[in-house]
Length: 266
Ligand code: FES
Ligand code: FES
Image (cartoon, rainbow, N blue to C red; front, side, top):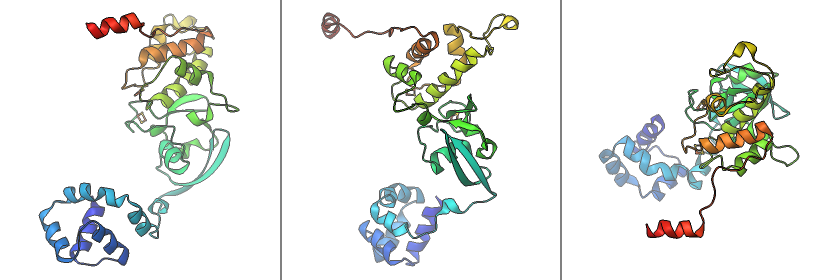
């Protein structure tokens, strides 16, 4: 909003560069009409109205010579991030979250930003094999740790078995939560192998390695990953298939033509 206010002031004082003049002329705002128009509209209105122009090629060209604001760092630190078997040296603001470093600096946009508050699980990645919320993890704490994102699960062009199972069991709808669900599921396989207990584990004192997780256990352990499309049943089926190694059949089936006909006439 501050940016828009600055633009408004600039326009009112007619203190525009040649490129800026072009942008506003293209928006149909020139000279006196520009000042009159601006008096009659709120900052919010102009920001909505001008948004398409601010993302246009013309605007992009006009701002290309401005210094890159993302490079003006406070509390600058250098971090070597080891992501998906590659080491990426980065210079970051010390407060940068791992999620922002992955998405904004390494362009690994498979990891999604949902709530940015540790509540939805969309940003789940694996750090040293453990699932972690990247929105609550500072990139600076990840030096020398092995980070795996959804982009790093496929090997030699072949999807990870969990990715294949999600496809087979239709474990998604819009797909926004899916990278987080899959990373969480892959790490959960290891937790089960290591015999780690959960809130619903019975007799956790006698817990052993290679746990066979019940459906209740899977749901409890995956409860940090929210799916707004409600694909939970299919996600559980997908996990069960990889966890048990059995060829689980999808719990849904296509309607027969008779059923379709019946539904049409109902
Ligand atoms: S974006 Fe990290 S938990 Fe929602
Ligand atoms: S598939 Fe849409 S949020 Fe999970």
